[in-house]
Length: 330
Image (tube, rainbow, N blue to C red):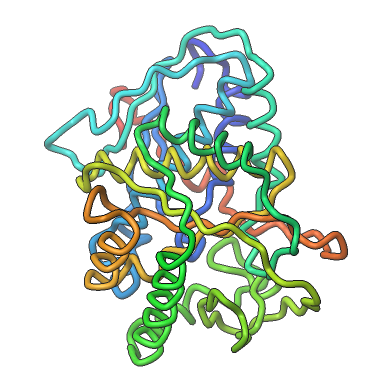
């Protein structure tokens, strides 16, 4: 970007944080296009997971998280983003356009931006320390500002949800196409795509929340304590593409807020990828009001836990489309 504000280095710095957003199987299903004083977010259909995510719900959710990461990064760098979501009905993969204006960063902008690099999807057991109610209240409030509801799952609803998680794992275990796709996107080592083996634990039959069976898991750890993780459901009143995009933004603020106060998080979407089980979650937890978009485990990592490695990401230049000589997107 040769003209206009902000300058190219600021845009590159913001995008470098935006691509740290979580995504299903670390597919990173986003592309960015840069205009004069504007940034545009597109869904990349080439990164689809047809067996895991047939209706592309997880993809849009992931892009929403990247959109919020970008807004947070720009705010910390002194730029506020005026966002138009789904600006072109004729082009549904054009998810958002951002116009940038000067902004004075506040402490929350800086704190959430700093949390981006520290956030991990921690699939290990958490500790026996309870999560303070104030922390749950804070993530609920911030998600509501972005158009999503966060429901804490307790008592019998939690038991039913845990059972649904186990049914989803058994369902997928019998789906050869799903297993092949999962193996394609996990067990990675020297690559910028997929879930790295070093961050995936082996299956443990006594875990309350069954983890996906990723290829070649290498994250070994000892779990001596009872896991006191809270289980949250993030939901929206609608279930169209715009609602799912907003849900991704709300997911981002929940994860970054939790990271900022020192909590560990893990996003779970497996039961929501199977329509009949997603409907069960909607009925059991939400009383048929609203649509579940993500499940989140939140708690304290044991003090003895080693810091997880950073999951790989594609370079910014690999996810940005250039402008052609006429000024149109190529």
